[in-house]
Length: 99
Image (tube, rainbow, N blue to C red; front, top):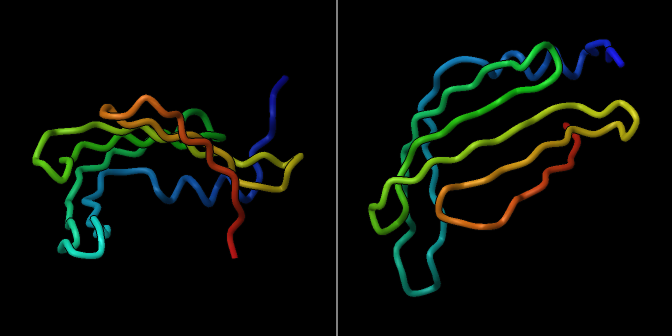
């Protein structure tokens, strides 16, 4: 089965490259927010999937690595993917749309 790339797959390709990601998350009502900076390397797997590898730190300063996949499922008319991080046992599934 050879799927043909669609415009949504081409949209993902613009994310390929090396990036610095900055983020902030709430650690609780009585704690200051955690600010993080991560190195991100994105590449396309063929023309259909984006593979993202990230290196960062936990709030405690421990290094952590993440891998994310993103693609587009034309049957579901949705972007789909997965996310795993080296400090958790959970596989996070993604499903969404652009608006």
